[in-house]
Amino acid sequence: MNDQNSAAQKELVIEAGRTEKQYWKDLWRYRELFYFLAWRDILVRYKQTAIGIAWALIRPFLTMVVFTVIFGQLADFQSKQSAPYPILVFAGMLPWQFFANALSECSNSLVGNSNLISKVYFPRLIVPTSAVIVSFVDFMISGIILLGLMAWYNFIPDWRILTLPAFILIAFAASMGVGLWLAALTVQYRDFRFIVPFIVQFGLYISPVGFSSSVVPDKWRLIYSINPMVGVIDGFRWAILGGESNLYMPGFLLSLGLVILLLYSGIWYFRRMERTFADVI
Image 1: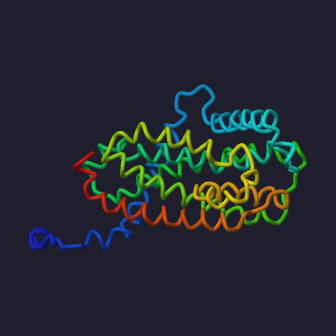
Image 2 (image 1 turned 135 degrees about the vertical axis):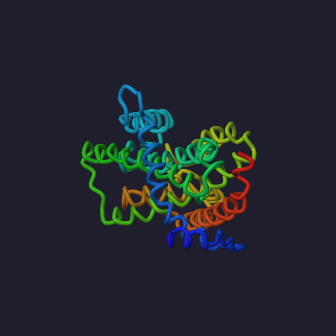
Image 3 (image 1 turned 60 degrees about the horizontal axis):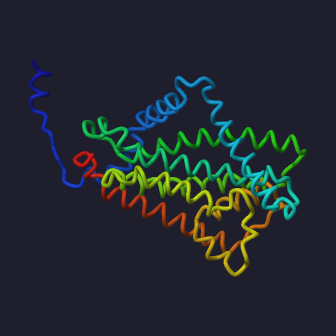
């Protein structure tokens, strides 16, 4: 009886603004949901495929071969590089593929989890973040190819390889920033489901994936660095190739500033639109 009376005396208090104050703490409280969504997407990605997770190795490897033939042999960019050209190409392919996969996964993440979003409260930021983590797993697996290329060409990186985690963090920030924008916009405007593949395809050609950004004339390099992935890719090559690759510092700082701006504005816009997701989706 005492337990029943005490339960009856409990009051539910709704405090204005409390959800906003507790939002970032809720991200930690709902960390198990984050783990669940990321692990589920990792399992589903290659489910019922004949070779499974090996696709994470085959796709970037074949893309690297095509780019090596087109830019290295036909366009003769290979003669301008002292480092093994396949390593140069794959050092640019790694961050780009991570970025491209993250955009594709993030843009559809909220719509793909519409049933969960419309019924249960949790910080919606968990959904696109878990999508980026799934792309990051593919990124780590694809790194095996880079190690294999280094062994094949007897290429040993210098001390700059220790800076690679910093550039990985920048790539992660770029993926999150643009991914949050696209995730929120796709909920509001479903046209972005068709726009995102075009953005990814177009971005591949204007980013220095199959070639070094040093081929761009000096007077255009700063403008070229408005593409934030230029600084990310150049940073990866500088860390992996060492003295064989130069880092254009003004362009890198411009790209880094744009990445920070995209991340900050992406979080701001996502949080602004988050309260409407359950109604619109």
